Structure formats: C-alpha cells, structure tokens
Length: 205
Image (cartoon, rainbow, N blue to C red):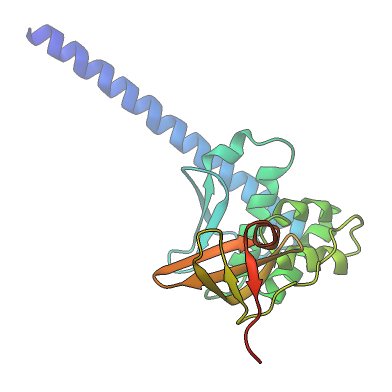
C-alpha cells in the first residue's frame, strides 16, 4: 500500500512538472510574439503577456498585463498576431481609454507600418471604430454604414404586446442596433429583428 501511494505521488509530481513546463513554454512564446509585434508596429511598451481561457484578449492597466485567450493559438491565419497588436495598442497609454478614436488611429498606424491594415477586419463585427479606421487608412471593401430607421425615444410593441422604448442606438459592423427598455427588462437588438418582430409606434412630438 505504501509503495502504491509513493508511485501515485511520483506520477502526480511528473504530471505537475509537465504542466508547469508547458505553461512556461507558452508564456515564453507569448512574450516573444508580443516583442515581435511591438517592434513591427512601432510600439515602445511591451508588458507581460499571459494566456487565459477562451478567446480574444484584454489589457489590464492596473496590473500592466495583457491576457490572450488560449483558443486563439489554434485560430486560422493572423488572428493571434492581430489580437496581440490590438492589446499592445491599448497598452501604449496610461489608464483605460477604451476604444476611442485615438486608440483606433494608433492601432491602424501600427498595422499600416507593417503592411497589415487588412487585419483590422477581425474587429469589423464588434467595433464601429474599426470600420472608421479602416476607411481612413484606405482599406478597400469596407462595409458601409446604414442609416438608423428609428430614433431614441421611439416606442415599439412586440408580438406579446410588451411595450419597449429605444434608449440608445449604435452600430456593429455598420449595422444599426438598439438598446431597448421595458419595465424590468433591457434588450439589445439588431434593426432587422425589430423590423421582423415589432410594430413601431413613434413617440409623440
């Protein structure tokens, strides 16, 4: 029984050692990639870059660290390269600036320096600023913006008779989207969904 316990402990220690070694190797690869991307884009500051679960990336100005989703290591093409470039662009300023116009200009300038502005397409589905930066950078085939069909304050009634009020509108990949409110509820919805399922009732003037 003692021998069996010792054997199990040895296997556990070996597995832990292999896991730690893999983590160190991954961290080293991320650090090397971040250094290469920063050099190519002309970014001066290169913080620590660590893996995390999921996909995408995030920059913590408080901890001064970038985290990159482990799933992006198997993503096709230059997805991982772009995620690192995106987060490095955030890291070049103090504090949390969000996705401001200054951020998108900094990122697009870095991508243009490498001849990879087309990689900004990875953000087309999420960030309106990415579309603007792509147009300003001269990228072709950028999706155009569509005009809003509804105004803030318009009333909408869904199929169940619930009355919603538009309290905010924005775009994703050039497509109009809205934030709706009903008693006890908030809902973000695309304009196409509103046109299919809602009966618009304009606010009284």
